[in-house]
Amino acid sequence: MDFNAAEEEEFGFSRNYFLAKEMGSSGKKSARKLSDINVVDEQELREASANIEPKHQNVIADLINRYKSLYPKWFFDLS
Image: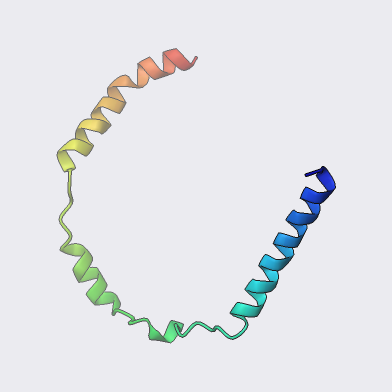
């Protein structure tokens, strides 16, 4: 297959692809609407978020301490 034939085949494929997409999706509409979303009261949301238990607090604290202790080394290495 020479270059022109490959280019023509690729053009035909992409043209057929987009024609098929256009023909197939012309009647499809989404049934989902913004009004279908259940809106939560702000007070309920605040109460629910207050009840969330933090996870991995010890691991996070250890990482922050390591970052702080290694900062001088990073600064030296990068300068």
